[in-house]
Length: 456
Image (cartoon, rainbow, N blue to C red; front, side, top):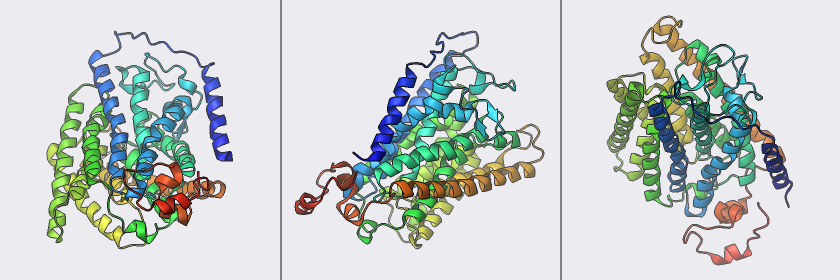
């Protein structure tokens, strides 16, 4: 038995035993403070956001070669297990626990979900978590879905060549050292970016910029796939369309739910989300055709997702006309970034940085431009607001790239991040999981000779 699996199993045993001693918070709602409509909407939105991760599995899984469909899908799906457990144990506390220097939350505030029940929580500085009309437990569950999908997005960059166990360790590293600090700084009432007045309504920098930059670092660190994998055809384009559709639907909860209320802000975010996605899908197709390509299902699917990413940081704060402009501009930039990447030595397999990274970064920059002066008390004029957004983007890019690259490096010292050349040739479905997608492996002789125990 490999030592890495012993470590993971021991960790689960410790968590399971600790769960026996965790306090049970009250789930009796005080409806003098709780708004039933807000509760109903946030439960619905939370379900929508969770659905995005299986949607991402289909979206990514359909893009890779037939020998790597299952492994690619599982890399997203497994986050629903790992991050959910970490979130309950200490993740929610790192993000929304009592502030420590504007950078991170106190891990003891909500350790093992202590005090996370139906009550409303007020910070030591007198600020309310979760909008004040929904139980803290529901707010924690809604935020957990964001934490789940963020590391899942990274997997597209190093698809078809990453060792599964090493990836799981990196996912935990990314969650603790990148996602939690950035989410705290951006969304906690006492966070550093929040105090500056930076608007990231639903995760432009916390989710998409951070995952895109970490994906770029991963693609650089792991190096290119073997030539035969880089030239392989997508395994299942209908999977890609299905995944894009699930992401589009789930994004209504992602953005609309971020108002934390069943109100006009949620409706505005809903409207802008759909408009931006539709605009981006058509822009991507038309731009491809202008460059001599045929309109493709893959292009339509990627385009709609780029629009969803682009509008995420500003969904509730811009007009519907501005949402069209924002998605149009960012789609052109993203399309050109994909073209540039395809002619570079960087093998970001599924274009995570050109789509999510670029969309999150430029979406945040344009938020700083279009955000209305006076919207954020105490931040000065519109130019100051814009500069704060530029500062946030710069900090997120530099911090995420350096820390994630270090994470890949330190984990690679313990567990090789990349599979062997032979395992990559056979495919990760077989070499990592001993499973196969349909008729993905026609050469039974190669598989029969392959030692399934030489990789975990």
